[in-house]
Image 1 (spheres, rainbow, N blue to C red):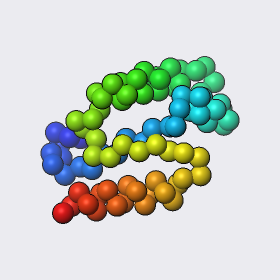
Image 2: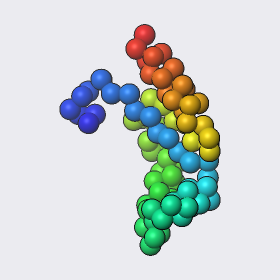
Image 3: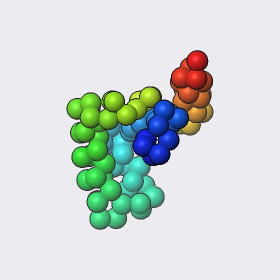
Image 4: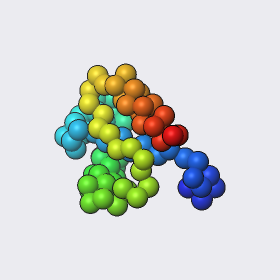
Length: 84
């Protein structure tokens, strides 16, 4: 996407508050019966924490439970700021 739309993307990385919260979220609705999604997410979160995604992200935000409106508002505000 970055190559195809160079300079025209706004990239947001939305992370869970913790791996434990992510484990609960995936387990609550059966999205990860074999644990493969959690293992992949743990590796991705470790990469994120090491700063590997920082050069590619315009916004990094944590998705706390019940924060849908807050996430949307923060993402929209950051995107709007990026246009100026």
